[in-house]
Amino acid sequence: MLVKDVMRSPVVTVGPEATLEEAYRLLLERGIRHLPVVAEGKLLGIITDRDIRLATSHLNPKGPCPTCAKVEEVMTQEVVTAHPLDPVEEAARVMRERKIGSLPVLEDGDLVGIVTGIDLLDALLRLTGVTEPSGRLEVRLPDRVGELARLTGYLAGRGVNIHSLLSYPEDGDFVRAVVRVNTLETHLLAEGLRREGFDVLWPPKKPW
Amino acid sequence: MVIYRDEYRLYNFGPDHPFSPVRLEMLTSLLQALGVWQPPHSPPEASREEVLTVHSERLVKRVEAASRGERVPDLEHYGLGTGDTPVFPGMDRAARVLVGGTLEGARRILSGEKRVLQLGGGLHHAQYDRASGFCVYNDLSVAIRHLTRSGLRVAYLDIDVHHGDGVQWIHYEEKEVLTLSLHESGRYLFPGTGHVHEVGRGEGVGRKLNLPLEPFTEDESYLEVFEALVPWALRAFRPDVLVVQAGADAHYLDPLADLLLTTRAYERLFRLILEYAEAFAGGRVLLTLGGGYSLDGAVRVWTLLYHVFHGLPLPERLPEGWLLVWQERLGRPLTPTLHDPEAPYPGIPRRPEIEKRNRLTLERLTELVSPYLLD
Image 1 (cartoon, rainbow over the protein chains, first blue to last red):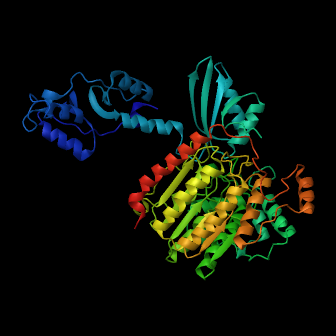
Image 2: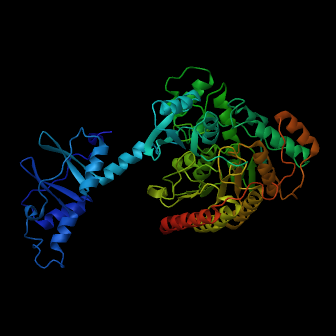
């Protein structure tokens, strides 16, 4: 999944000469929180609802006046951006590390989209496959070549379709695999997997 | 009134499939052996047009073709030909026979019958253009639509251990249908839906209620949230009729799920459902079967249902002859009493935590739907 698959386009933008009040109204009307600042097709900066609220708060007596101050006085410059072909996990990582809520997406210097934390959550939902009717299996696998293939091979052999498969490393040379499968019979699958030597964590084994 | 015909057993995915017609054979033979079986009303099968009141033409066409043994390349896209819902010859008619039973129940209610027990159906996973989870056509939705088109408000109550997703999505935007599903949380169990925040859309907002329960919920916690939620919702919605999917797979012996109810909880549930029908729906209630994949558990649960439905005294032991025949046929022992033994499984150490979480889920649900439920 790439940034171009999850980004919003076209992007709502604002010019550097707009007043803070105009920018804030635009944010409210569109129900968004991030406004790239653009002049002649080039990205100059970005301004968020929070930037405006902090700048114009009554707790900030030296703050600019909302109706006359311009966006360019308050916007963040040297914007962190993404490319349409960046993987979504890279975008998520940059946003997390820089503690920012969105990334304008640039291609050859042109603004072609924007990706926000919400878009990344939507991406996560799609990656987990929860939108299809499915049951859930959780299996702990040794972290070595061929284990995942053994698991998916077993499922294929039972005629079970996999809607999604997520895996992540666990302590002690293990990998945790979370599989969404198109069957009600996850308990019976789990029993079969246990007989094949798999460490199935969900569904649990009943003690009777 | 009880609705049943032997052709229900044509709905058969094969000998190793959990949705087995043996359940009906065992159930009806047990009721006969107990001497309580009365000749049921035999329903006609539903017509193609009746099926089309809730399903797409393209789904029905594929079911018909697969039923005739034709090769259909995009069958899996429609949820058919999968491990769970394989195709078999005559599947279209077999499914229409079950739909016909539930639909006949709806017709009987409209013509003045108060209580109807349909000994089959409950295919709550089937969606508008997709078969799913053992369910080809959605008999419940066909019956519900027949009732709403006749001007009735319908409250649908689903106690199957799996979320009643098909019925919910089919009526998701309808104001006159309240759906109320208690199930093991989709976090852990098929179909993965049925979260508290699925409350309906458009005119249907606040009329679709889901109470996802923790695995290992057990009798006490289940009854606690059921008795808090169901009468509250019914009182607010004021239905004309209650349609109930009485799946038996929340039973502790069920091989596909983990809610761990015993027959004692089921007896109480069935009595409460009839009481609620009296109190909130003018006594009108249409009950169907549903999931239930432990032959031992499901057959006793539905035998209980039959007795409570007719107001019959409950037998304690099951007839010896019946037990002998079925134990030999299945090659394993069966519980000899109608009720489960006391404390039939080891204690669940996380019980207080589970009860707390279920209460919290109930609270979140009622907070979410309260603003909408009252009309």
